[in-house]
Image 1 (tube, rainbow, N blue to C red):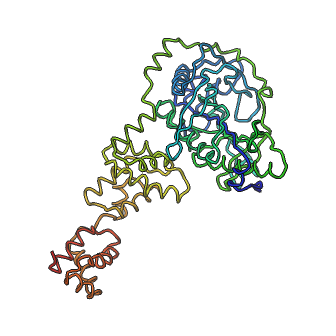
Image 2: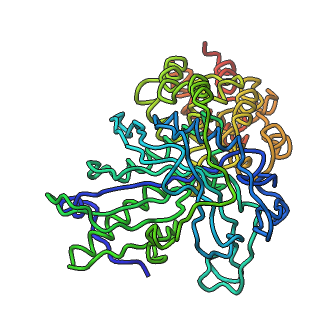
Image 3: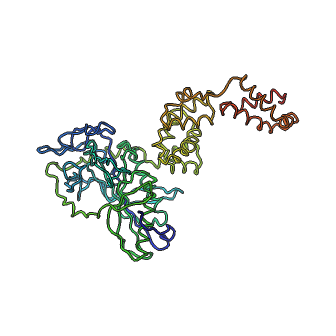
Length: 500
């Protein structure tokens, strides 16, 4: 049962939101954080493990140098200071998907600290968010709950654990409290996670696929009565793994907090779980403070002391900042400010860039990613990246259109079949006999039928009202299931009627 909520507008009239984000980024290193087990997604459960990642007695961890490099690069890209010395610690808690019964993380000495990132809201307004720290740690395994109706632990008959993810390298980026967002707080949440996802992809340190959990956000929300200066009690919505869900979760929590506070109640400091089906959160567990985890220095790992010259080398090798890249792409593609902003907000910048790089025109790439592909993703309730349509598919569709094998209307059908897993565009066109009808004999038969049914339209066209020809084209397209070339049909009709 969902908690009571206040309307968002009423909540904003009475309270100011304070936000904070902890974004976990899974690194794409070949091996795990502290051992040589493969870091691969989708392999047979429990096949990518070693005695170290399973926490068996007598094993000793070794820090993954590539993960340290990725952490330094991300810290530099976030304008952080890089610690000359940082340490790992043991964070003690029992979860069945954490085989060691503790997580190796960084506590009071993170590798990167005191940074900032400037993001853009949907209308281009800049907003600077201060970064408290970015630290290295390892991921937990994955639990799958079986036997229940929802796939959650509540009501499940039993749970399965997969330790393939246990020990995968993570960087956790923690912001300082964010104030001043006002009624744009949900929008800011989405924009911030979008910016982090874009940044780690540009650095090449993560696949950044949110549907796979490569980027996950813990969203902290609290409210202050208007005019107050002391932060309220926060809740933390855990492991939100889509851009849309981050925005919705922050909005919901603002409305829930406002309802509790307006009725004279108190907010419980706790973790919450986001449910996309009901677009609401439910209570998890009381939020632990650092003391509850009994942090102590990891005795089996040496301090991390990056060479200052190496840090400067990595700084010099940083790729073009995402904001500069966007500016360059906008100029290359010739998009208007509004068109480009829509592309960025839709999260398809990378897809369009890849599509253009593979040979499609910038206008065509935008048309498909912002049009039919976006529409279909919305209908299916998934992120565009999860739909299954790739830049290569779009290029192939454009090639088929250019060869007049299909038209735009058929292309939309093809995209739907790709999303249903039926294969590539050419394969689908052949299997479903979707190619444009190019046989003039077939078209003329359909044209003759249309003219016989609408002699008044024929008379109008012959009388000089050429624009009326559209009324004849429609039935021909219907007769050919939309597979005729409308331009060719028009030519044949005018030719038969002797109209130039």
